[in-house]
Amino acid sequence: MQRPQTIPRTMHAMLLDAPHTPLRLAEIPVPTPIPGQVLLRVEACGVCHTDLHIVDGELNQPKLPLVLGHQIVGTVAALGNGVQHFQIGDRVGVPWLGWTDGDCPACRRGQENLCAHAKFTGYDLDGGFAEYAAADHRYCFPIPAAASPVATAPLLCAGLIGYRTYRMAGERVERLGLYGFGAAAHIVTQVAKFNGQQVYAFTRPGDTAAQDFALRMGADWAGDSTVAPPEPLDAALIFAPVGALVVEALRHTRPGGTVVCGGIHMSDIPAFPYHLLWEERVVRSVANLTRQDGEEFLALASRVPVRTDVTIFALEKTGQALNRLRAGEMTGAAVVTIG
Image (cartoon, one colour):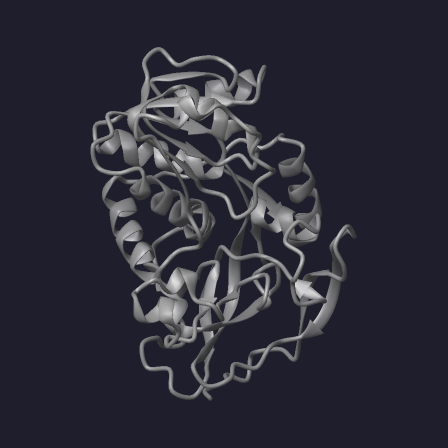
């Protein structure tokens, strides 16, 4: 392992000790990268609804105590044995998918996002709400040295999961509905407009701030999730963790259209009449991401180019960012900056 002498022995991190408890600022040892890992000096880490689901106990098997955060941008500070693709000083990004076994049936089918033994950043593995983080080099993406860490961080989950959700809608989509207009939707909107599609944004009833934000980001129409769009949708992407929105989206999706659930957790989907699904409508989910998703999306994001709308929080204010996200007070993405 290459380990410069400037790396301290301890670091500040925001720890989750148990679900339903506030994060606390703690001083803990700097991780030592094992073979195949890189140690990153964290520059920025995005805040995600998945972090909320972990804190609120809806994803209920995290390692504890836990450093949350899975949209990490940092520079390589040390290399574990066997790392050849990165050098000290390189800027890299770390996504939600942090490790797979490479040998289970899903991995052999090319579906590493469904690996039976996968480990996830900020859930099974300590994440990026800290001054340093260790990550498997195989699941790190190169980030240009000139890129803004703050602007890039949301691309690593909101962008990547949003992109996979977008792709699952299919190719013949002229009118795209987005339910829940936050970090993922404001990125997907830019990709859809780049591809010449119409975007219809649905928000919480009465959330005119989010509707105005959607229009500023390029949406062709924005309104409450309880109303019909001007035209039937070819596909709908659901980013809000509200199961009832599946039914609403089906009501407004044309025959043969697709409704894609983009979240890792969602409240129960209520019963609905069969005729809403009939005529070959499809409801499907998205789970995690693959490294190919990351490579494709990051290349596309630079061509669009995708611009992220970001609210910045200091490390010790991470809990405040989560509370604002829970309350629906965020537009765009929240990012914690380190140092």
